[in-house]
Amino acid sequence: MPQPKQDRAIRTRHTILMAAATVFEERGYQAATISEILTTANVTKGALYFHFKSKEQLAQGVLAGQDQNLTVPPQPCKTQELIDTTMLHAHRLQTDPLVRAGVRLTLDQRADGLDRTAPFHHWTTIVTNLLTQAQQQGELLPHVNPQETAQILVGAFAGIQAMSQATTNYQNLPTTITTLLKHTLPTITHPATLTTLNLTPNITHLTQNTNTNDEIGEDNATEDNRDTSEEKDNTENTEAKEKETAATTH
Image (tube, rainbow, N blue to C red):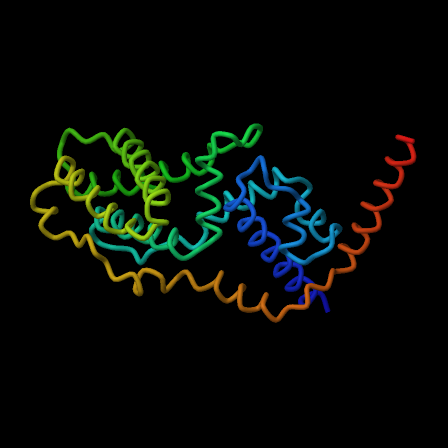
């Protein structure tokens, strides 16, 4: 039956991504090696290359993974939904190694050859959409330009989280993000809306939709990491190519 094989491949891919996240977070993009990721993941070279053809593809997988499970419960007030989304991301930076590694890669100026623009564009789009909805509902002041404001908020968050990581290993991040919102929201939000906002949302409530990765992670703890037949074939192909290259070199 194809389903068990497919499930195993999904779990193997997740194992590899989490191992790559660990190595990228500790070493950065340039210093990280495929060998280190293989050792951390405890999978074969063929299994890794079946899912990811290069270190760059691995990094892009980690970059994309930081935005998974970011959905918060919809709110009638879209400014509140923006706050909830921001605070959930701050919480995940404290608790999710895939998110931390993704953010480190995004801000890694030494990651030559790696396209790091996608997370910035993605976050700016999310914030712009929420601010646009808020504006349409009369929650924002008349002068606010949603796209410009989104760029400022995303940039400010990136800087604050980087400082929090360097100084407290993200321990003070919720507090500093709350302070950022206290300073910025009064300049863009209608006073009637401002008085209704909750800057300390219930994180347990916000994380109710983010259990998928945790469940996969628990499955990985008991998964034997056996390769699928395709992965075994890929192992053989990879080894054959390496032998051919070595023979040609000599």
